[in-house]
Image (cartoon, rainbow, N blue to C red; front, side, top):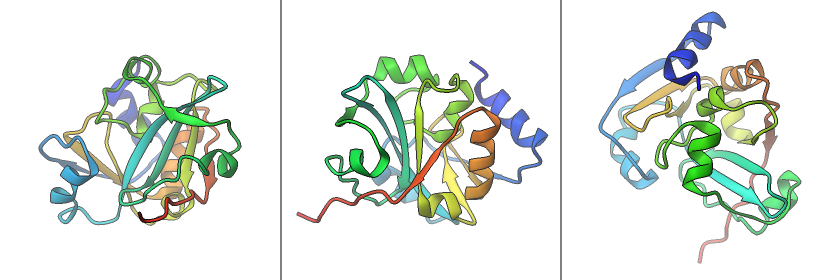
Length: 167
């Protein structure tokens, strides 16, 4: 596991501009809304999923998105999905629940997890994600996030993520 030091070394090596904001631990999107106002840009939520075929998925969407998990497989080309187990999250990405982030793929071998980035996040001038821990937020551009994932050998899928209808 390369960890946060490896993440920041790669950001520097690739010349990727970013802002780092330290804050109290946040475990949910609702908790993070209290600090989001002080941090400009698109805020995200990340879902660690497993499909019925045994493949693991990391989905990054806008923080307030309500993802339709029943429609998601057709949108991204997988089988039915459910939430992944905490032990698989730690084993594959080296982070605990509450700290899920696409930046944790610094710890993942290529092809061990499929990464899906919402099309708005991938294009955003500024996207905010955790740097492997939920006590900080890193702001970088969506294109730079995609470049970083590619640098680590991950071919992220950029997709329109289906939204769940309001109930």
